[in-house]
Image 1 (cartoon, protein in one colour):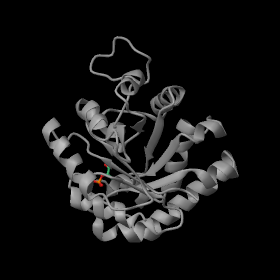
Image 2 (cartoon, rainbow, N blue to C red; image 1 turned 45 degrees about the vertical axis):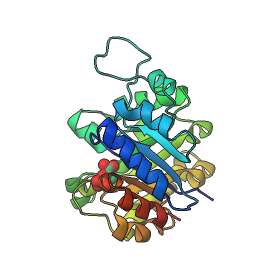
Image 3 (cartoon, protein in one colour; image 1 turned 90 degrees about the horizontal axis):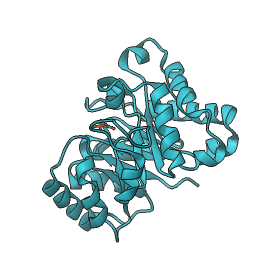
Length: 250
Ligand code: PEP
């Protein structure tokens, strides 16, 4: 059985002080759950978040990482830097990184390779844009994103991967994919993985849904058989909402 995972992507929100306050509230209100919980604060808040959560079951992830070992990449953060402050998970391929910072499938493949080589867990995001959904090419788009960045990996590397299907038209828009639309895509991904990577990987890999998940819709989405939890943006910034979403994951 796959352990559900709920991860909160804070994006460029929360100062150090606000981050500490939110984590204090979250730790206090955390429901009794079998789900794994991860928060992804901005880079600057990571060391304090790791310290604050060191005796907690809540894990800490970074929102991005550079693909190189080190060097002249002004403003960037390497895998070793994340590891050195106790971060063990990184989100890669978020649609905002793809669209605002031009991250391509090819670049993401390099980032995934570097993260896995450093034994980081990767939450890999992908998903179609609205026009692609409307034109019916969403399955093709998702297949390409996965194929180009991940299909070269072997079964042991897949153990450190979590997938996050995030239709771009549902991120931060208030519009959610229906539970049936989420299940349809997640089942497609699992079948694709079974064919291309192996049945063991397809069965074991967790596939999160992301895109305007909130307390009111979380339970129905998470109850779909191929949905293993969620990647949560806006609703992870308020402890009560995030806690209600965690509770919905089981
Ligand atoms: C996200 O950015 O990963 C996300 C799912 O955002 P939101 O929940 O705000 O749609």
